[in-house]
Image (tube, rainbow, N blue to C red; front, side):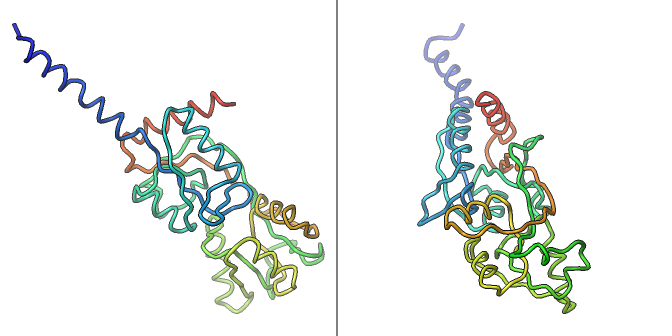
Length: 236
């Protein structure tokens, strides 16, 4: 029969893994990019309704959290490396897909499109891209479409201008330094509304699902993802 000190030690050792597990997964590092008004990174202060959603879900799931703004490319790299634990975005990045786990179903949807000052400028097919001046946001891959555009540019058939923000990209379009803007609908609408800019004509290219993405380097990543999904369902 175990004496009291031995019994206490055994109970301590049995409970230790549970304590470590709780400590390791108690605080989530949330990463966001600048996609106003959904994700807003101004002066390093995270905001936006997708940011609010992630923070509400984390809280509901029983986690503390910290939120930081990162450039697009660095965000996915940081997620893959475990520097951040959670993001809600496209599950399309093949480079890091085996280092990230994603929710089975999308949490939100986002639409990618071409925008122009006149409907006559919008292409009816990819053949109409030829000779056009595109403006894109630097760092965005547009689910691989940027590679296709760059290949066409290398053939001398189009030109691509790269802006450092959605707002600057739209300024280039309005100033007629570009014919077509490639961007996501939430960013375009947010910028138009914020600056009372003239409406643009658009052509939808694709619709993408936004998934909860958790780094595989997050301790007990699958359990963390399940808790987040359950919390999101409870908030519906």
